[in-house]
Length: 67
Image (cartoon, rainbow, N blue to C red):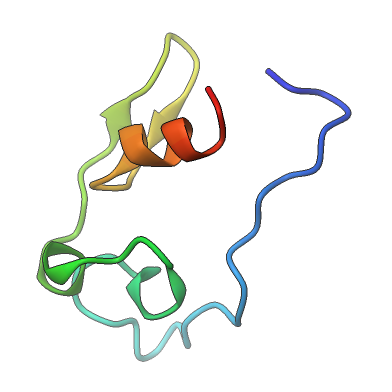
């Protein structure tokens, strides 16, 4: 939707694929992580006709980005 704009990236390194953490695999380095992220893997939410998000807080993420 925003060609030419910089992508938002989570700082840090991706998890070791042989030791993926429980819950959301991004929770160790995600600034929005909450308790549910440590225990429950998020489902794939349909964000639009062509996009999905596997984040419990995808709405908040879009709000933070000004969408």
